[in-house]
Image (tube, helix red, strand yellow):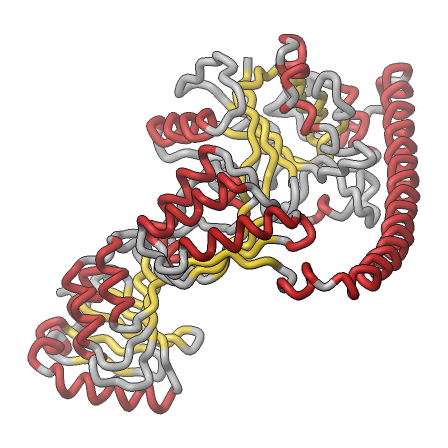
Length: 518
């Protein structure tokens, strides 16, 4: 018989179905209570809602619980009425990846004290209905976007778009920016400020027209005052007069008094000069520090590579000195002794990666996690450059469907994956020879054909190593192909294996290259 398990986890009340244990016959219509868990039969709950509600109220008061987590929509619909009059419960979360139903929406509204919910997805009309009742919605489903506008404002979820109050827009706007701002205006209900980085009449008129068409009011477009001319100021004055009835306005970062009153001009110019000198000194100091650090970092990597070359050369002259003696070769034959020779230097060595016409030509290591070689070099010494390493989930003896290799984007020195971005240059990928990557392990010599290159906001959807079915794998291939900056005309089948190179490009973006084993 299906039971409802109510437990306390991290000061939250969690409700799930529990039907995998056998229950004693004498407990079928009763409940089990412990310090951390309560188990109720469905029939008992249906017949004793008032009693159970009172019990839950006392429990929430005693434990100071204000958040309840439901496992799925069905359980939410069944149990939410029990919390209708519990004043301490002000927020709820539905864990499963399903769209919330209208019936649940009505129950939430009917609850007296709930003012915040978290769910996977919700239809737009429901979020508006809940918003009218002062209930805020957070959604977890994300969508991919290509416009700079959506990216700059981190508008990855429907609820973020709906509640956003301030946005930044870089001008001039692209067609993708305009399309996404139109969509944003249809959804949003709280926008108050738009900050733009330049003065473009056509874009400003587009913003005003779009907001008016979608009934957005009391929004101010803020324009940098130092970028406008006196004629621009006159244009904005007339513009504000014509859009006053729509409750939309353009405003300069500096007041009109500042623009008109020349008495402060020289003071501001002098201030700017002083700030410029200070900025020059600061920037110069930073550049000197970065340049010095990059110089020594590059020298350190060069020194390691020279030692690597020496070990490989010594091994070629004295094969008996190879580190392959440390490997169990009963099942797998070592085919690349030059890699095996590096095991004496670092037993974590699993391969060698080379990307044509870049600086990427390094041994590859692998740790028990994906953190160690972010801050340690091939010698296992603490090093801001880290090293090139394989995902800890991968197997160097028997490659999975997707083998992932990471490295820091040391852009200024060009070491590690600092030159991987070159692959996005048309002049680079137009050269057919560049499209073949060499990645070898101890046991195999392999070439890989590039089929996708792209930049993406920080996500984990491309770093899967295993796939439940062939259909899942092909769906993954379609996703990463659709992001590519170029169609490389490379066919991928369910039998293929993929190599993924990944590096950071800013805190919230990743630069990725995919290739298939050929």
